[in-house]
Image 1 (cartoon, rainbow, N blue to C red):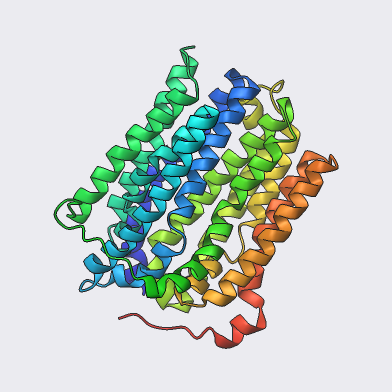
Image 2 (image 1 turned 180 degrees about the vertical axis):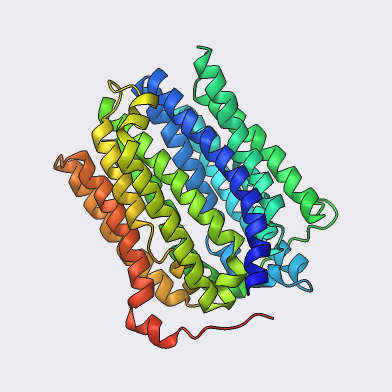
Length: 400
């Protein structure tokens, strides 16, 4: 077990290095955009970001999770990857048509991101993780998520014109580059190896899995969309910065889980160790923010643009809430407990969205929304860990 941990740890160091640069680029873009862009453009960019993440969840609705084990199997990976890719392409074409019609009717350039849905669909970095190519997956993700923010930060800092169209085109270009890179790493040619095949008989189970995963993955994005309808100026900028910084921390946590995904599924003891690893990392970050958080935030962000105190308190709270039982939701899904997973995520997410809407409608303080997000994450983790059905039925399995 120690050898497994050490081997994965070496990969983790490299992946963490790439992820760290990527998260730093996102942070710098958040700083530059909040300090230099007007609230209207900031709102549109936030809507594009959230639309992109929602599209990714919609076209993956349970598909990648359902076929994950088969893609990890050497003898079945190509056939299963084709099946997952076929489902994703069908859904992406629907999203593309919706986006095209909406763009032609309204002229809203935010909808341009929907036209890249087929490119998002053929990005198979999830298969790289399942195939054990963690470093390659991290590098393709690095290209896709880092370079657009670096280029956009430079353009904004230089005072050059950046609008929604420029933003979408730059993001779309690197989506194409990353997708080509993934296919090369998989030794997969879309024109030679792709075989369109839809397993309609499994659609019901895939949707069942997908509803739960999609709801959990996109709830933060819907929260921004709801808040954008009620907040402007400093309030909207604070929400935007908070969600960007929160997703940075969440991205690092997800990277650790993806690196150890096989061990999390197969070894209960290892999953406990990874829980401790993430918990210690999260609480260490809390200590760092307690000591110098306001100084760091004031050094980067213009105090006239957002509420530094609210942002500082909210980041402390959200990181604490995300430092406990981090792998339990992933383990529950990976071991096939789809009904329980869907029940937990759908019920918790529905309550959370309803409360967010009420908090906005009745003008609750902005920090109450951030507290609600933190409690949502904590309740999800605790439910997966302590619900009696889960404790009774979840028997650790070994993968040879």
